[in-house]
Image (cartoon, rainbow, N blue to C red; front, top):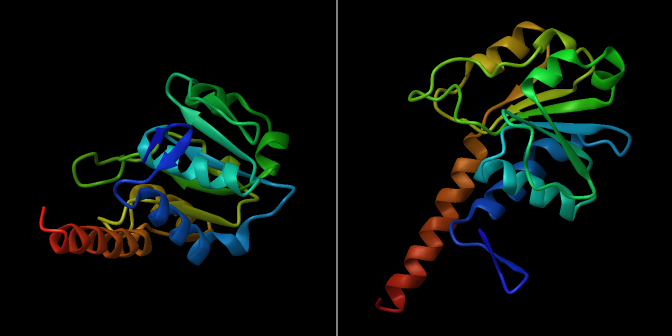
Length: 173
């Protein structure tokens, strides 16, 4: 998506994908007195932030540099600062989302967060869909947390892309 004349213009289904994915998987876990922690600040994270801001959902973005454009519903910290946070900080988070490529086949490994401090989360959500269970999800599963991967979002983005290409084909471009 991109901003055009102060309006958001979706180009590849990313916003629709995130909206559909959240509504089908995370909505039941969103609580007004809690926050969503988003790991990463790339395009997928921006789509999440757009959705959360549009729906008055509080969130925290964790980045390497600590900088990301932020709305009145969110703030950001670095991964280093996350490790230094006290237990009170973690009590206010009930959803953790991996919006980084870490865990994919091309970027193996595990997102560097203090997993054991997330005692109160209801669910861990990884936008990654291949592999089905990343190290991020495996670790939360081992801690007894509910997990969801990004497959449902992939399905919806595929459908959205198909509709876009079908429309373009019908316009004979």
